[in-house]
Image 1: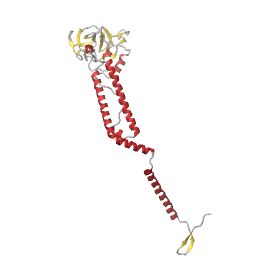
Image 2 (image 1 turned 135 degrees about the vertical axis):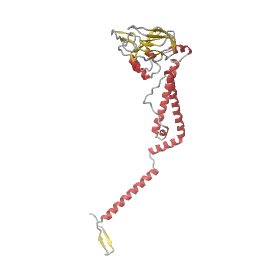
Image 3 (image 1 turned 90 degrees about the vertical axis):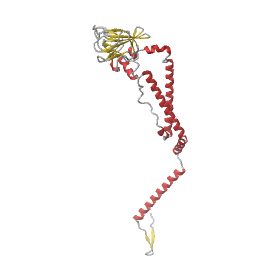
Image 4 (image 1 turned 90 degrees about the horizontal axis):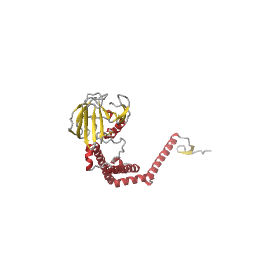
Length: 324
């Protein structure tokens, strides 16, 4: 049973029964809430000032480490980025000098973080970035060692190799060549006249009539043949490049050189036509090594990227009909 509360009334000088007051109840509840809130804030501040969580300890240690080593890291990262940029430039320059074309880099190449972003990151991100940087250097060193070994063992050029190197047909035989212009490759193909299989000794490069035909290496003109027969090579040129290399350019419209003339690589020697046994304007191009026909696409080395050469190689293997 609840106890009855009384209070002393100064006016009546008597003890009277206390009645319930809404205002006093609300005031008391508000007072309790304010006291609880102030007490909670005080405990929270006290905890932050006195106690330190493991995460806070780790973050404070990271901040101290970054502050202590900021200048060292800045210098090392700057040096690393300069070295990477220098290696990329040297790699690009070497590739361009060797193959006379641009180097296609993968689009998803790893991008190293910026110095500012790296220094303000947390420890985990910093360790990941440092590991990524180390892996990049390791990969560059591996590629450099592999390339050095290859060039030293396989691609080194001595004085005795220079004559054959200069004599090797190394460019496309027409101006403004595109890989899609190769319409028939070297090997077994379908003859356009009797529709039987035969060995196609060269490659057929489609081009408009009158397109310039160029010498694929320096040499001397050994044959200039003009023919009105609707069979065989029609108008054609043969160039002796020395060291066993000879190139043949057939079905020409015009011949712009004479027998015995010396020519340079890339020099115009004639124009594309459809003379002889040809069903459409094109250039039939052959490469012979010591009197034996070899696949000319192996010598399309200059001016093509790796991707373009891959497409060219795929087109040359199609078992289709030739144009001559």
